[in-house]
Image (cartoon, rainbow, N blue to C red):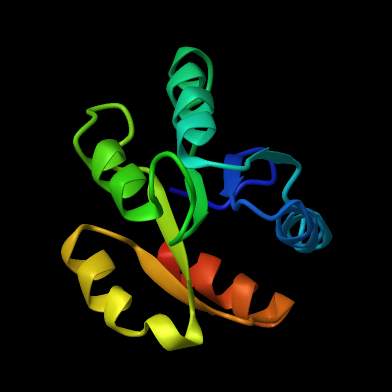
Length: 131
């Protein structure tokens, strides 16, 4: 899949400040179609609704989100025919390195360790899409 400014991206993080920061970084590198969710349940509702027009191409999800955890959201997407090939970038804290192995075994495309810079985000997205 090519990196297009119009591809649909969803940011899933319980902290509104983190979502806004990430949304600004994505905007600064050229992405225009970014939606947000504060928990996994809201994220799944938005992801599921996207199947009708343009399915979500990239999920950037915090490991620890309420209602449906990041790992469970990943598994839900991998089990769904429409979204099983959508890219999934998991965000974990420095202390949660063991979660990386679990995420990889569950089909995550890439992992980003918090804190991260705009350059790291750009590199992770490029690697996630094989660029």
